[in-house]
Length: 73
Image: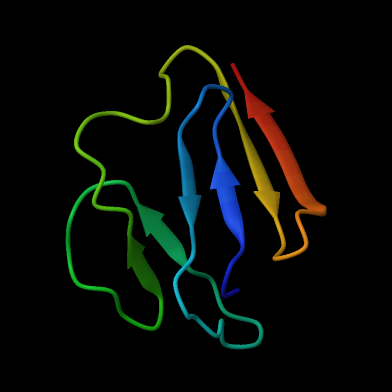
């Protein structure tokens, strides 16, 4: 997932560092600080990213192709 990005409906964007996601595994992206592990990545963002009322997530690959879009309200 190196170079992939996650973006919210606003202007918050996270670019994955060098990272190889294990097959059939789940990775959790935390917006706060911490130490990256195989299954947890930390954005180290100061302040909220995701809105409680409604927001969207855009996941794009290293070529900026949309891989996933999801919204919630």
